Image (cartoon, rainbow, N blue to C red):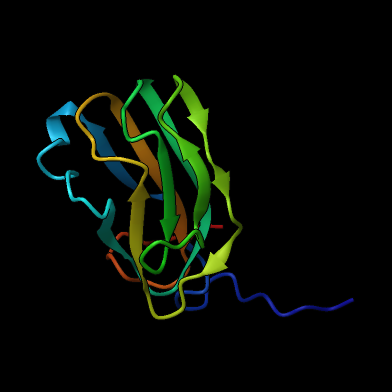
Length: 140
């Protein structure tokens, strides 16, 4: 069987490590995460990316108790059932999706944050150049 070798054609092969959005919650962020609605726009995911995972990493228990992540206010399109009530890694990742033209990230907390040491993580892979970090692999 014949094939055409295109391994050295333009930008056919690009490499990029997984990207990560990390949101810190705890006593040091209590002045930021203190709104009565407990709904926060925390950032934007870039266009041309696939969201691959989301989780809550609790080092010190926080009074926020529950955490959800969505692409709309109060949504759970990214993660549902995250908790800061126990030390460890948890959260129910809703499932992989394409960010298409880019999406906002909204976080909803069960209560205002005054204590704890927590990271909320969203992993994604960019398949189009957005941040200028892609490297051409030219010696395959």
